[in-house]
Length: 112
View 1 (cartoon, rainbow, N blue to C red):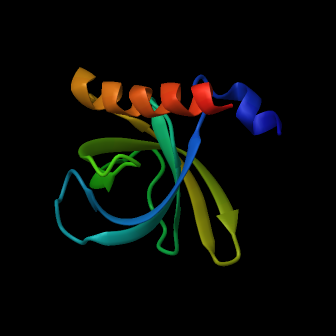
View 2 (view 1 turned 90 degrees about the vertical axis):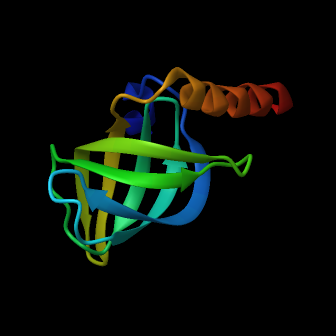
């Protein structure tokens, strides 16, 4: 998977539904399906077209049950028949939230 090799941080599967809203207009709640998460970003599916380069916000419940309020800038869009797969980077994530993801990554690495 050449795409995985370009990533700075390993992504871990996380299958949850969240609602994203565009930061600029804070209006419509867009349902998306989270596919994976890393310290620096997120992969997700959306049947609704989202804008590349735009920042959205969402509350993401991670593996530990902790909820992280995240700002996500869309940096990759891969079109599919049923919708699109998006890649986003976390923007301005506090160190405490980043650390919660890192703890899970460390736990997963120890299990491998």
